[in-house]
Length: 420
Length: 62
Image (cartoon, rainbow over all chains, first blue to last red; front, side):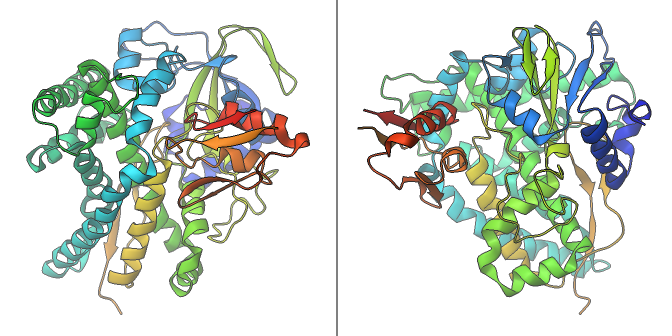
Protein backbone atom coordinates (compact mmCIF):
# COMPACT_ATOMS: atom_id res chain seq x y z
CA UNK A 1 0.00 0.00 0.00
CA UNK A 2 2.67 2.53 1.00
CA UNK A 3 4.43 1.67 -2.23
CA UNK A 4 1.86 3.82 -3.99
CA UNK A 5 2.34 6.78 -1.66
CA UNK A 6 5.11 9.16 -2.71
CA UNK A 7 5.46 12.28 -0.56
CA UNK A 8 8.03 13.64 -3.00
CA UNK A 9 5.68 13.67 -5.99
CA UNK A 10 3.84 16.89 -6.90
CA UNK A 11 0.86 14.68 -7.71
CA UNK A 12 0.59 13.71 -4.06
CA UNK A 13 0.27 17.33 -2.94
CA UNK A 14 -2.31 17.98 -5.66
CA UNK A 15 -4.61 15.33 -4.14
CA UNK A 16 -7.73 16.48 -2.28
CA UNK A 17 -6.97 16.94 1.45
CA UNK A 18 -8.99 13.88 2.49
CA UNK A 19 -6.89 11.64 0.23
CA UNK A 20 -3.67 13.08 1.69
CA UNK A 21 -4.90 12.49 5.24
CA UNK A 22 -5.81 8.91 4.31
CA UNK A 23 -2.28 8.38 3.02
CA UNK A 24 -0.79 9.87 6.19
CA UNK A 25 -2.87 7.43 8.23
CA UNK A 26 -1.60 4.52 6.14
CA UNK A 27 1.98 5.68 6.68
CA UNK A 28 1.48 6.10 10.44
CA UNK A 29 0.02 2.63 10.75
CA UNK A 30 2.19 0.67 8.34
CA UNK A 31 5.41 2.57 7.62
CA UNK A 32 6.02 5.31 10.22
CA UNK A 33 9.66 5.78 9.14
CA UNK A 34 8.96 5.66 5.39
CA UNK A 35 11.92 6.44 3.15
CA UNK A 36 11.54 8.59 0.01
CA UNK A 37 13.79 9.85 -2.76
CA UNK A 38 14.48 13.59 -2.68
CA UNK A 39 12.82 16.10 -4.96
CA UNK A 40 14.99 17.11 -7.92
CA UNK A 41 15.86 20.78 -8.16
CA UNK A 42 18.07 22.61 -10.64
CA UNK A 43 21.79 23.15 -9.90
CA UNK A 44 21.67 21.00 -6.77
CA UNK A 45 22.96 17.45 -6.69
CA UNK A 46 20.31 14.95 -5.62
CA UNK A 47 20.79 13.81 -2.01
CA UNK A 48 20.39 10.36 -0.48
CA UNK A 49 16.67 10.62 0.36
CA UNK A 50 14.78 11.21 3.59
CA UNK A 51 12.70 9.53 6.27
CA UNK A 52 9.18 10.90 6.67
CA UNK A 53 8.08 10.81 10.31
CA UNK A 54 4.29 10.74 10.46
CA UNK A 55 3.56 9.79 14.08
CA UNK A 56 3.14 12.41 16.80
CA UNK A 57 5.42 10.62 19.29
CA UNK A 58 8.33 10.22 16.84
CA UNK A 59 8.20 13.90 15.87
CA UNK A 60 8.18 14.95 19.53
CA UNK A 61 11.22 12.73 20.16
CA UNK A 62 13.20 14.22 17.27
CA UNK A 63 12.18 17.84 17.81
CA UNK A 64 13.00 17.83 21.52
CA UNK A 65 16.55 16.50 21.02
CA UNK A 66 18.27 19.21 18.94
CA UNK A 67 21.73 17.87 19.82
CA UNK A 68 20.84 14.59 18.07
CA UNK A 69 18.77 16.09 15.26
CA UNK A 70 20.10 19.45 14.06
CA UNK A 71 18.56 22.23 11.97
CA UNK A 72 21.77 23.75 10.62
CA UNK A 73 21.88 21.54 7.53
CA UNK A 74 18.49 22.90 6.55
CA UNK A 75 15.03 22.93 8.10
CA UNK A 76 12.83 24.09 5.25
CA UNK A 77 14.40 22.29 2.28
CA UNK A 78 14.92 18.56 1.84
CA UNK A 79 17.79 18.85 -0.67
CA UNK A 80 20.92 20.35 0.93
CA UNK A 81 21.20 23.95 -0.23
CA UNK A 82 24.36 26.05 -0.10
CA UNK A 83 24.80 27.15 3.51
CA UNK A 84 24.62 30.87 2.59
CA UNK A 85 21.17 30.34 1.10
CA UNK A 86 20.01 28.25 4.03
CA UNK A 87 20.84 30.99 6.51
CA UNK A 88 19.76 33.87 4.28
CA UNK A 89 16.28 32.46 3.83
CA UNK A 90 15.90 30.51 7.02
CA UNK A 91 17.60 32.74 9.57
CA UNK A 92 17.55 31.06 12.98
CA UNK A 93 15.05 28.42 11.87
CA UNK A 94 17.97 26.78 10.03
CA UNK A 95 20.61 27.29 12.71
CA UNK A 96 21.71 25.40 15.79
CA UNK A 97 22.86 26.69 19.13
CA UNK A 98 24.83 28.72 20.05
CA UNK A 99 24.17 30.91 16.97
CA UNK A 100 20.48 30.10 17.01
CA UNK A 101 20.27 30.90 20.72
CA UNK A 102 21.94 34.29 20.24
CA UNK A 103 19.53 35.50 17.55
CA UNK A 104 16.56 33.99 19.30
CA UNK A 105 17.53 35.77 22.52
CA UNK A 106 17.76 39.17 20.83
CA UNK A 107 14.50 38.64 19.00
CA UNK A 108 12.72 37.14 22.02
CA UNK A 109 13.29 40.32 24.00
CA UNK A 110 11.34 42.29 21.45
CA UNK A 111 8.76 39.61 20.79
CA UNK A 112 7.30 39.11 24.23
CA UNK A 113 3.53 39.21 24.69
CA UNK A 114 3.86 42.52 26.55
CA UNK A 115 5.88 44.13 23.76
CA UNK A 116 3.29 42.97 21.24
CA UNK A 117 0.32 44.37 23.16
CA UNK A 118 0.13 47.58 21.16
CA UNK A 119 0.29 45.75 17.84
CA UNK A 120 -2.31 43.26 18.97
CA UNK A 121 -4.64 46.07 19.98
CA UNK A 122 -4.52 47.31 16.40
CA UNK A 123 -5.35 43.88 14.92
CA UNK A 124 -9.01 44.32 15.74
CA UNK A 125 -9.22 47.70 13.97
CA UNK A 126 -7.39 46.29 10.97
CA UNK A 127 -9.68 43.29 10.74
CA UNK A 128 -12.77 45.51 10.89
CA UNK A 129 -11.39 47.82 8.22
CA UNK A 130 -10.65 44.90 5.88
CA UNK A 131 -14.04 43.26 6.43
CA UNK A 132 -15.97 46.48 5.86
CA UNK A 133 -13.98 47.15 2.70
CA UNK A 134 -14.55 43.57 1.49
CA UNK A 135 -18.29 43.92 2.02
CA UNK A 136 -18.25 47.08 -0.07
CA UNK A 137 -16.35 45.24 -2.81
CA UNK A 138 -18.93 42.45 -2.72
CA UNK A 139 -21.89 44.82 -2.77
CA UNK A 140 -20.44 46.77 -5.69
CA UNK A 141 -20.13 43.52 -7.66
CA UNK A 142 -21.97 40.20 -7.64
CA UNK A 143 -22.12 39.85 -3.86
CA UNK A 144 -18.95 37.79 -3.66
CA UNK A 145 -15.27 38.48 -3.00
CA UNK A 146 -12.02 36.55 -2.73
CA UNK A 147 -11.56 36.04 1.01
CA UNK A 148 -7.82 35.40 0.71
CA UNK A 149 -7.07 38.54 -1.23
CA UNK A 150 -9.36 40.87 0.69
CA UNK A 151 -8.97 39.61 4.26
CA UNK A 152 -6.74 36.62 5.04
CA UNK A 153 -3.67 37.85 3.13
CA UNK A 154 -3.58 41.54 4.05
CA UNK A 155 -4.34 41.09 7.77
CA UNK A 156 -1.17 39.28 8.93
CA UNK A 157 0.94 41.14 6.39
CA UNK A 158 -0.13 44.53 7.69
CA UNK A 159 0.35 43.38 11.28
CA UNK A 160 3.94 42.37 10.58
CA UNK A 161 4.69 45.48 8.57
CA UNK A 162 3.33 47.68 11.35
CA UNK A 163 5.37 45.78 13.94
CA UNK A 164 8.53 46.33 11.95
CA UNK A 165 7.66 49.93 11.06
CA UNK A 166 7.56 49.36 7.31
CA UNK A 167 5.99 52.25 5.39
CA UNK A 168 2.53 51.63 3.91
CA UNK A 169 3.92 52.22 0.41
CA UNK A 170 6.11 49.08 0.71
CA UNK A 171 3.39 46.71 1.95
CA UNK A 172 2.36 45.53 -1.52
CA UNK A 173 5.95 44.71 -2.43
CA UNK A 174 6.40 42.72 0.79
CA UNK A 175 3.25 40.70 0.05
CA UNK A 176 4.27 39.97 -3.52
CA UNK A 177 7.85 38.96 -2.69
CA UNK A 178 6.90 36.78 0.28
CA UNK A 179 4.33 35.05 -1.94
CA UNK A 180 7.14 34.11 -4.31
CA UNK A 181 9.37 32.74 -1.57
CA UNK A 182 6.59 30.58 -0.20
CA UNK A 183 5.06 29.59 -3.53
CA UNK A 184 6.50 26.10 -3.19
CA UNK A 185 7.21 26.43 -6.91
CA UNK A 186 3.48 26.67 -7.76
CA UNK A 187 3.66 27.73 -11.44
CA UNK A 188 0.53 29.87 -11.21
CA UNK A 189 1.91 32.00 -8.37
CA UNK A 190 5.28 32.36 -10.08
CA UNK A 191 3.92 32.93 -13.57
CA UNK A 192 6.45 30.47 -14.99
CA UNK A 193 6.79 26.73 -15.51
CA UNK A 194 10.57 26.88 -15.69
CA UNK A 195 12.36 25.77 -12.54
CA UNK A 196 15.38 27.90 -13.49
CA UNK A 197 13.22 31.03 -13.78
CA UNK A 198 11.54 30.13 -10.51
CA UNK A 199 14.91 29.97 -8.75
CA UNK A 200 15.83 33.39 -10.16
CA UNK A 201 12.58 34.94 -8.90
CA UNK A 202 13.13 33.33 -5.52
CA UNK A 203 16.62 34.86 -5.21
CA UNK A 204 15.48 38.33 -6.29
CA UNK A 205 12.56 38.21 -3.85
CA UNK A 206 14.91 37.56 -0.94
CA UNK A 207 17.20 40.37 -2.05
CA UNK A 208 14.32 42.84 -2.30
CA UNK A 209 13.08 42.07 1.21
CA UNK A 210 16.58 42.23 2.68
CA UNK A 211 17.31 45.55 0.95
CA UNK A 212 14.13 47.08 2.32
CA UNK A 213 15.27 46.12 5.82
CA UNK A 214 18.81 47.44 5.30
CA UNK A 215 17.30 50.79 4.33
CA UNK A 216 14.98 50.77 7.33
CA UNK A 217 17.76 49.67 9.70
CA UNK A 218 19.91 52.63 8.67
CA UNK A 219 17.01 55.01 9.30
CA UNK A 220 16.20 53.51 12.69
CA UNK A 221 19.79 53.62 13.89
CA UNK A 222 19.75 57.31 13.10
CA UNK A 223 16.22 58.00 14.39
CA UNK A 224 14.90 55.18 16.60
CA UNK A 225 11.12 54.83 16.98
CA UNK A 226 9.09 52.40 19.07
CA UNK A 227 8.94 49.73 16.36
CA UNK A 228 10.56 46.29 16.42
CA UNK A 229 13.21 47.24 13.87
CA UNK A 230 14.48 50.00 16.16
CA UNK A 231 14.65 47.57 19.08
CA UNK A 232 16.42 44.89 17.04
CA UNK A 233 19.15 47.10 15.57
CA UNK A 234 19.69 49.22 18.66
CA UNK A 235 19.36 46.27 21.01
CA UNK A 236 17.43 45.95 24.19
CA UNK A 237 19.58 43.03 25.30
CA UNK A 238 21.34 43.44 28.66
CA UNK A 239 24.73 42.81 27.07
CA UNK A 240 24.14 45.36 24.30
CA UNK A 241 24.01 42.69 21.60
CA UNK A 242 21.98 43.60 18.49
CA UNK A 243 21.29 42.17 15.06
CA UNK A 244 23.58 43.05 12.17
CA UNK A 245 22.02 44.31 8.92
CA UNK A 246 22.38 40.88 7.40
CA UNK A 247 20.80 39.14 10.38
CA UNK A 248 17.96 41.66 10.36
CA UNK A 249 17.35 41.06 6.65
CA UNK A 250 17.20 37.30 7.17
CA UNK A 251 15.02 37.67 10.24
CA UNK A 252 12.60 39.80 8.25
CA UNK A 253 12.43 37.18 5.50
CA UNK A 254 11.69 34.61 8.19
CA UNK A 255 9.04 36.89 9.67
CA UNK A 256 7.42 37.45 6.27
CA UNK A 257 7.38 33.80 5.55
CA UNK A 258 6.67 32.43 9.02
CA UNK A 259 4.36 35.13 10.27
CA UNK A 260 2.50 36.02 7.18
CA UNK A 261 1.55 33.08 5.03
CA UNK A 262 1.05 30.81 8.01
CA UNK A 263 -1.53 33.01 9.72
CA UNK A 264 -3.14 33.74 6.37
CA UNK A 265 -3.64 30.05 5.74
CA UNK A 266 -4.78 29.32 9.28
CA UNK A 267 -7.52 31.93 8.83
CA UNK A 268 -8.47 30.75 5.32
CA UNK A 269 -8.43 27.08 6.29
CA UNK A 270 -10.47 27.99 9.36
CA UNK A 271 -13.16 29.64 7.22
CA UNK A 272 -13.21 26.51 5.06
CA UNK A 273 -13.45 24.29 8.16
CA UNK A 274 -16.45 26.26 9.40
CA UNK A 275 -17.99 25.76 5.97
CA UNK A 276 -17.50 22.01 6.27
CA UNK A 277 -18.60 21.95 9.94
CA UNK A 278 -21.25 24.70 10.13
CA UNK A 279 -22.46 23.55 13.54
CA UNK A 280 -19.03 24.49 14.93
CA UNK A 281 -19.47 28.03 13.68
CA UNK A 282 -22.86 28.26 15.40
CA UNK A 283 -21.27 26.85 18.54
CA UNK A 284 -18.51 29.49 18.70
CA UNK A 285 -20.88 32.34 17.83
CA UNK A 286 -23.19 31.22 20.65
CA UNK A 287 -20.37 30.84 23.17
CA UNK A 288 -17.43 33.27 22.80
CA UNK A 289 -15.65 31.63 25.75
CA UNK A 290 -14.71 28.84 23.33
CA UNK A 291 -12.24 31.19 21.59
CA UNK A 292 -9.15 29.70 23.21
CA UNK A 293 -9.82 26.07 22.32
CA UNK A 294 -11.28 27.06 18.95
CA UNK A 295 -8.06 28.80 17.93
CA UNK A 296 -5.99 25.75 18.90
CA UNK A 297 -8.30 23.51 16.89
CA UNK A 298 -8.04 25.79 13.85
CA UNK A 299 -4.25 25.57 14.05
CA UNK A 300 -4.39 21.78 14.42
CA UNK A 301 -6.86 21.47 11.56
CA UNK A 302 -5.03 23.85 9.23
CA UNK A 303 -1.43 22.92 10.13
CA UNK A 304 -0.23 25.75 7.87
CA UNK A 305 3.35 24.42 7.81
CA UNK A 306 3.23 20.77 6.79
CA UNK A 307 6.76 19.77 7.75
CA UNK A 308 10.19 20.78 8.99
CA UNK A 309 13.41 18.90 8.44
CA UNK A 310 16.13 17.79 10.83
CA UNK A 311 19.38 15.90 10.23
CA UNK A 312 20.78 13.18 12.52
CA UNK A 313 24.10 14.29 14.03
CA UNK A 314 25.09 10.75 15.06
CA UNK A 315 23.85 7.17 14.96
CA UNK A 316 20.80 7.08 17.19
CA UNK A 317 17.74 4.93 17.85
CA UNK A 318 14.37 6.68 18.10
CA UNK A 319 11.35 4.67 19.23
CA UNK A 320 12.94 1.51 17.85
CA UNK A 321 14.18 2.94 14.55
CA UNK A 322 17.92 3.10 13.89
CA UNK A 323 19.02 6.40 12.33
CA UNK A 324 22.54 6.95 11.04
CA UNK A 325 24.59 10.13 11.16
CA UNK A 326 23.57 12.37 8.28
CA UNK A 327 20.11 10.86 7.82
CA UNK A 328 17.53 13.42 6.80
CA UNK A 329 14.35 13.38 8.82
CA UNK A 330 11.16 15.17 7.78
CA UNK A 331 8.65 15.75 10.57
CA UNK A 332 5.23 15.71 8.94
CA UNK A 333 3.19 17.86 11.34
CA UNK A 334 0.17 17.57 9.04
CA UNK A 335 0.10 13.86 9.82
CA UNK A 336 0.94 14.12 13.53
CA UNK A 337 -2.01 16.48 13.97
CA UNK A 338 -4.34 13.72 12.78
CA UNK A 339 -2.65 10.96 14.81
CA UNK A 340 -5.47 8.75 16.09
CA UNK A 341 -3.36 7.61 19.05
CA UNK A 342 -3.25 11.21 20.32
CA UNK A 343 -6.50 12.80 19.16
CA UNK A 344 -9.95 11.25 19.61
CA UNK A 345 -11.93 11.54 16.37
CA UNK A 346 -8.89 13.16 14.80
CA UNK A 347 -10.71 13.82 11.53
CA UNK A 348 -13.46 15.77 13.25
CA UNK A 349 -13.14 19.56 13.62
CA UNK A 350 -14.14 20.18 17.24
CA UNK A 351 -13.63 23.73 18.56
CA UNK A 352 -14.00 22.57 22.14
CA UNK A 353 -11.20 19.99 21.86
CA UNK A 354 -9.18 19.80 25.08
CA UNK A 355 -6.47 18.82 25.60
CA UNK A 356 -5.17 19.60 22.13
CA UNK A 357 -1.44 18.85 22.00
CA UNK A 358 -1.17 19.70 18.30
CA UNK A 359 2.12 20.38 16.56
CA UNK A 360 0.84 23.25 14.44
CA UNK A 361 3.47 25.57 15.94
CA UNK A 362 6.09 22.85 15.84
CA UNK A 363 6.88 20.29 18.50
CA UNK A 364 8.71 20.90 21.78
CA UNK A 365 12.24 22.15 21.38
CA UNK A 366 14.27 25.28 20.72
CA UNK A 367 12.56 26.05 17.41
CA UNK A 368 8.99 26.19 18.71
CA UNK A 369 7.16 29.03 16.93
CA UNK A 370 8.21 32.35 18.40
CA UNK A 371 5.08 33.99 17.05
CA UNK A 372 2.58 31.52 18.48
CA UNK A 373 1.14 34.16 20.79
CA UNK A 374 0.72 36.70 17.98
CA UNK A 375 -0.79 34.09 15.66
CA UNK A 376 -3.29 32.96 18.29
CA UNK A 377 -4.44 36.51 18.87
CA UNK A 378 -4.68 37.30 15.17
CA UNK A 379 -6.74 34.19 14.47
CA UNK A 380 -8.99 34.81 17.45
CA UNK A 381 -9.61 38.44 16.52
CA UNK A 382 -10.13 37.57 12.85
CA UNK A 383 -12.93 35.13 13.61
CA UNK A 384 -14.54 37.26 16.28
CA UNK A 385 -14.60 40.14 13.78
CA UNK A 386 -16.05 37.91 11.07
CA UNK A 387 -18.80 36.66 13.38
CA UNK A 388 -19.65 40.21 14.37
CA UNK A 389 -19.45 41.97 11.01
CA UNK A 390 -20.04 39.14 8.55
CA UNK A 391 -22.15 36.48 10.22
CA UNK A 392 -23.66 35.87 6.79
CA UNK A 393 -20.33 34.91 5.18
CA UNK A 394 -20.62 31.78 3.05
CA UNK A 395 -17.99 29.98 1.00
CA UNK A 396 -18.92 29.51 -2.67
CA UNK A 397 -17.44 26.37 -4.19
CA UNK A 398 -14.11 24.67 -3.50
CA UNK A 399 -11.11 26.87 -2.67
CA UNK A 400 -8.08 26.92 -4.99
CA UNK A 401 -5.26 25.26 -3.12
CA UNK A 402 -1.56 26.00 -3.34
CA UNK A 403 0.47 23.20 -4.92
CA UNK A 404 3.11 22.85 -2.21
CA UNK A 405 4.30 20.13 0.13
CA UNK A 406 5.50 22.69 2.66
CA UNK A 407 2.64 25.17 3.03
CA UNK A 408 -0.94 23.98 3.40
CA UNK A 409 -2.12 27.00 1.49
CA UNK A 410 -5.28 28.37 -0.05
CA UNK A 411 -4.69 30.72 -2.98
CA UNK A 412 -8.24 31.86 -3.55
CA UNK A 413 -11.54 31.28 -1.82
CA UNK A 414 -14.68 32.94 -3.12
CA UNK A 415 -17.17 33.87 -0.44
CA UNK A 416 -20.60 35.46 -0.57
CA UNK A 417 -22.20 37.93 1.82
CA UNK A 418 -25.70 39.29 2.07
CA UNK A 419 -27.68 36.11 1.42
CA UNK A 420 -29.77 36.07 4.54
CA UNK B 1 15.03 23.80 47.92
CA UNK B 2 14.37 24.50 44.25
CA UNK B 3 12.35 27.37 42.84
CA UNK B 4 11.23 28.23 39.32
CA UNK B 5 11.72 31.67 37.79
CA UNK B 6 10.10 32.92 34.61
CA UNK B 7 11.74 35.70 32.61
CA UNK B 8 10.02 38.28 30.44
CA UNK B 9 11.07 36.40 27.31
CA UNK B 10 8.25 33.89 27.94
CA UNK B 11 6.34 33.37 24.70
CA UNK B 12 3.69 31.13 26.27
CA UNK B 13 4.58 28.07 24.24
CA UNK B 14 2.96 25.96 26.93
CA UNK B 15 5.90 23.56 27.04
CA UNK B 16 6.28 23.76 30.83
CA UNK B 17 2.57 23.24 31.45
CA UNK B 18 2.50 20.32 29.04
CA UNK B 19 5.40 18.65 30.84
CA UNK B 20 4.65 19.49 34.49
CA UNK B 21 1.07 20.75 34.81
CA UNK B 22 1.10 20.56 38.60
CA UNK B 23 3.90 23.15 38.78
CA UNK B 24 3.27 25.39 35.77
CA UNK B 25 0.27 27.03 34.24
CA UNK B 26 0.15 29.23 31.14
CA UNK B 27 -2.60 31.76 30.63
CA UNK B 28 -3.01 34.98 28.65
CA UNK B 29 -0.48 36.78 30.85
CA UNK B 30 2.24 34.17 30.41
CA UNK B 31 3.53 31.26 32.42
CA UNK B 32 2.97 31.05 36.17
CA UNK B 33 4.57 28.93 38.86
CA UNK B 34 1.87 27.19 40.87
CA UNK B 35 4.09 25.52 43.46
CA UNK B 36 6.85 27.44 45.20
CA UNK B 37 9.14 25.87 46.17
CA UNK B 38 8.92 22.99 43.71
CA UNK B 39 8.14 19.70 45.50
CA UNK B 40 11.21 17.43 45.68
CA UNK B 41 9.73 14.73 43.45
CA UNK B 42 9.00 17.22 40.66
CA UNK B 43 12.32 19.07 40.55
CA UNK B 44 13.81 16.82 37.86
CA UNK B 45 10.72 17.22 35.71
CA UNK B 46 10.82 20.99 36.20
CA UNK B 47 14.49 21.07 35.17
CA UNK B 48 13.58 19.11 32.08
CA UNK B 49 10.87 21.67 31.32
CA UNK B 50 13.44 24.46 31.73
CA UNK B 51 15.78 22.70 29.29
CA UNK B 52 12.99 22.44 26.77
CA UNK B 53 11.65 25.97 27.15
CA UNK B 54 11.94 27.37 23.61
CA UNK B 55 12.55 30.93 24.74
CA UNK B 56 14.82 29.92 27.63
CA UNK B 57 12.52 31.92 29.87
CA UNK B 58 12.19 29.24 32.52
CA UNK B 59 14.93 28.63 35.06
CA UNK B 60 15.05 26.31 38.02
CA UNK B 61 17.30 27.68 40.74
CA UNK B 62 18.35 26.19 44.03
